[in-house]
Amino acid sequence: MSFISFLKSKVFFKQFALAAVAIVVLCFIMLKWLNITTNHGNFKTVPDLTGKSIEVAKIDLEENDLVMKIQDSANFNPKYPRYSVIDQDPKPNKQVKENRKIYITLNPSGYRKIEVPTSIIGKTYRQAKPTIEALGFKIGKTTFVDDLGKDVVLGLKYKGKTITPNTKLSKTSVIDVVLGNGNRPTAN
Image 1 (tube, rainbow, N blue to C red):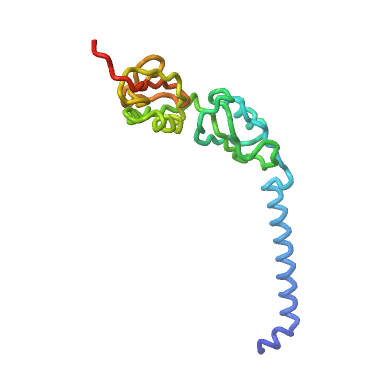
Image 2: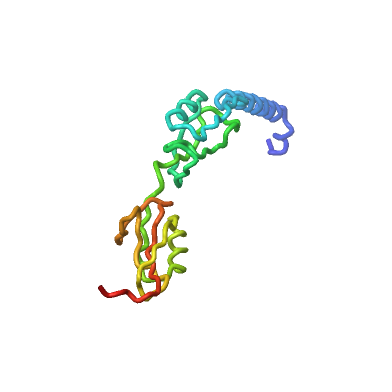
């Protein structure tokens, strides 16, 4: 029997029909199985965790059959309590499947410590101020002492104590600056 005559035979059409029916039945069974195992159409609403402590956030997520994953802590935000949630992904009120991972970002315990730049001593106030502020520190009082260099930074102080090299302070700390007033120091 040649190939072309086989394609025209009743045996081929019976086999083809059986294969088509088997494929349709398998597809139907697979689609039903996927609907059941993926909970098709069943969604959970993501709760708003912003500002909540890590313990409360974990309870809220467990009640909604969601999983908490903590991402690295962000920069300190004084608007939120320490160790509270400041961001989450997916965002609140989104519809997700159960057991979905919700990524949260926590507020650290405080501002991170930054080394005070003592290299600005000997530079002018105009040069030193942007360097100090760029690091997140704030300029406090400026005091003047007798020195030939007018507006030259002679020292830095924090809470009345002189800052030494390698001193680390929290971001947003207020640093007082000691400047020269341009007058010759008087000899005693």
